[in-house]
Image 1 (spheres, helix red, strand yellow):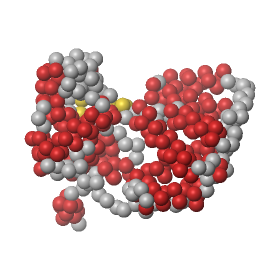
Image 2 (tube, one colour; image 1 turned 180 degrees about the vertical axis):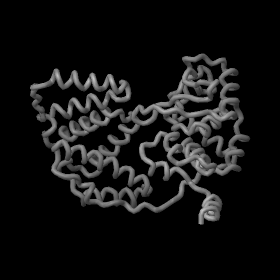
Image 3 (cartoon, helix red, strand yellow; image 1 turned 30 degrees about the vertical axis):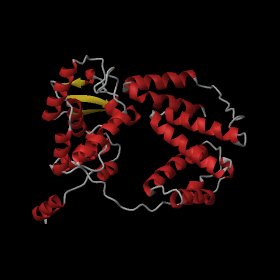
Image 4 (cartoon, helix red, strand yellow; image 1 turned 60 degrees about the horizontal axis):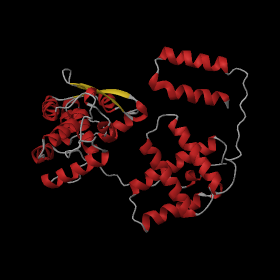
Length: 331
């Protein structure tokens, strides 16, 4: 028990300390907690019924916060857990694989939830029950009895060169053009974009530091076009270093939100005649373009801030012509 607590403390500090500082912290913790006994009080957690379920949810959320999961992600976890509990009307310890099959069956057939969305929801619940099982708060994970949902293989397409040009032409403000160029150039997630300040940009080097999932730091870059439009936008705004990088058009110029970016891009897509315009598609587009232009996929992985190469593979769409040219070259 005590070792798990100390390990969680050290892991939570990884993004904030150097390896030397982490080693010192680790040593100090183990020295000070040597021979200390920790008794786990489970009075609230083992209580059966609604109160006990809420306590388990709070404990699960706390464990995710300890590893720097973003608040939006935690909200999605808790929303799905509570939706499932409310729908089934059962206590956690009484829910079976059959119950979950019924729940997802109704969601799919009667409410028209997409299969990809259902798979994501199933992942949230499985992660929750894995935690409860590891903490010995329940005996098993009923999600494992549901089995994998068969997901239709659909290729999520990047923007074509023609679509990108249409989007650029469709921008009716300097801010929007700068934002489009920035999203494509840097490949940042929309949550990363709206958190940036003017001071985060090193314009002379055409680079910036962003903090991704789990507060993981990575460097990304501005193309000449992105630098040109961003600088014009910031100069026109007379933006100061401590101000948000992108702000609303209306006064007072508040920090642009995720919803604000999404709304702006939907309107841009309608004006430009381009379907399915959303922030993440720019990320997919730059990843695909870099790969097709010859950047090694390991470097694309680092550029996007992915933990696993498999994730990068999902993002990138290799052009058929590139495969054909490589076949002629290597076969």
